[in-house]
Amino acid sequence: MTRGQRSSTVCPKAIYLRIASNRYAEEVHDERLADREKVAAALRQISRGFAARAQAVSAGADEVSREERYRRVISEWGARGLTREQASALFRKHGFAPQASGGWSRGEWIELRADGRCYLTGRSQAWLAEQEADDGR
Image (tube, rainbow, N blue to C red):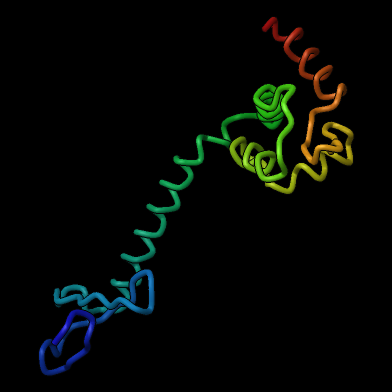
């Protein structure tokens, strides 16, 4: 019998759990885990652990104010032109939805030029200079 096959004759008390895909099955031989409610509770706890790790990996976006994230986007963007994909990646990096560039464009913070790249407008540069002057940066 190969891994993943089910056979009540080989392991009659085994509980098979689907893990990450329908293609894989994992056998649980420990009779203490035979109670489905306990198995479900354990899986929920594992899930919470993954959610906590994902939050930690997201570079603490919740700890940084929205205004500071604006500053970081504008500072990193600089005077260079970005493709739409690059702009989306920059917004994502700083905790914004990739579609935020549309709102920034409508608000005249960025503009699409003839070369097909997005650039910060004078309004963005002036706002950043004002913020840096207020902070003494």
